[in-house]
View 1 (cartoon, helix red, strand yellow):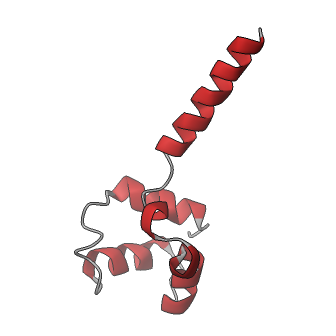
View 2 (cartoon, one colour):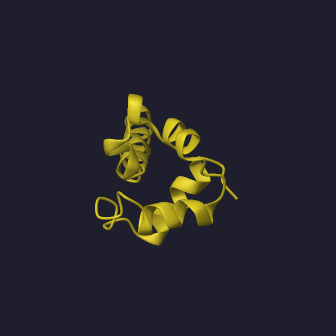
View 3 (cartoon, helix red, strand yellow):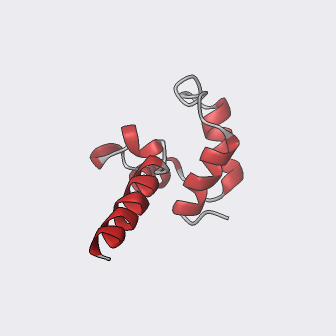
Amino acid sequence: MRIIFFILLSFFLLFSNAFALKCDKCHRDDKSLDKIFQERGVKNRQELFDKLRKGQKAKLHQHLTDIDINEAAEQMKLR
């Protein structure tokens, strides 16, 4: 029974890490999403989409899908 528990636990941990935001790979510490959103004044999803698609760093973020951006917006509790 313990083995099944640990297998399930490890599966959920691995699954959640694999599904973690792509943003978290680069945006850590000084470049955290919280700080960037505050500095840039991002207050809603549309502003986030505009900054990532048309902003200065658009080329760096071109690999992000709309789903990825929506997940980031949900994590940051943007409307």
